[in-house]
Length: 402
Image (tube, rainbow, N blue to C red; front, side, top):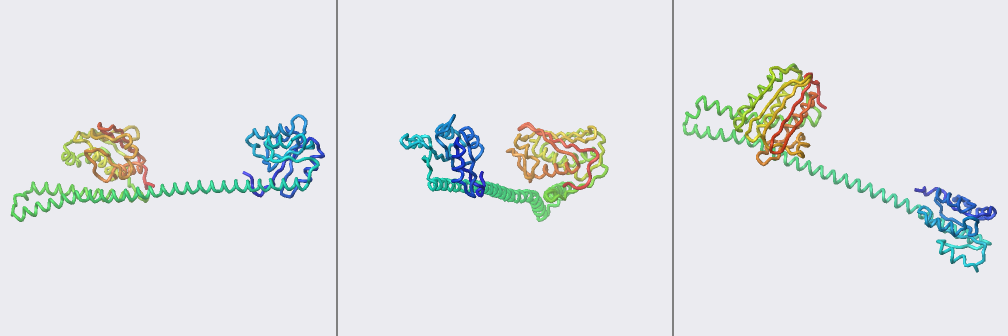
């Protein structure tokens, strides 16, 4: 687009040099550039290369007369709106004015030229051109402003959606926390109420060593559930703030996996399932045993929770410089769409049978695996089951997860 302060160009076309010089002298001004063409062909080249406020064209020229030039100008997109003023030495009886207007001219001037008339007409078209350029700049500025406003409006909508999503997540999170906390607390409360009632009735048979052992076991599981919930929330905070740390040391993953499977056997029994373990005798490496245990607990607990009471298979093996743990269930499975987000915070399987937990376990587990230089992947089919695979380098990276 033209600069509004740029000099305005006028084109004069005549095959006679003396006529060009005369028109140049009449039209010249400090804010203008007068360009000359001695033929229609030369004029077309200039018209295609420059933007003109006005073209003053002699009618009688060899090879291509003014009317032919005007016809070509009107048929070309770049030049069809350039105002044309015909200049002719022919008498008015030839009716050039009628033919000129028919060719698209804005005026026809007869020689000898009236200097004041020529200057006046040129001034009008120079001002019109100047206003058109200014208008184009305004239109461009308005269009840029509109695009900027649309961009800002889009950002505002996006921010509002993100804010609303955050608010919804916060509300859902608070609701989930309340639910997850209430479940074990209610269980503990009911246990206490039952035992209080038995004491009130002096029913000491309810407090045999065997019953006390069962009672304490149930209470311990509920307390562990609450502690695990709190630890998950703290881990999310650490991850978000870049403060999740690992403290690796020599560890035997085989011993660790077997211990987790044993510890979760009562949970599996309550769910009507069993844990089937196949592990190599020794898979040694350099890891944060506490954090790796946390990952495996999450994977096996999820498999029990979503496994429809069918056996949960846990396999441990070493492949080259990697330790590989696979946890497979035959439960509700995960859709292809859900698999893309399953490792994000607050994402949970959406089966009708089960929908429990805060949806933090896999998110935390993935971050812990990555902090060790490893990864967790999933293969799943809806209503068939899922296999989660943990891959850990035997020599884990040490330090902090950023």
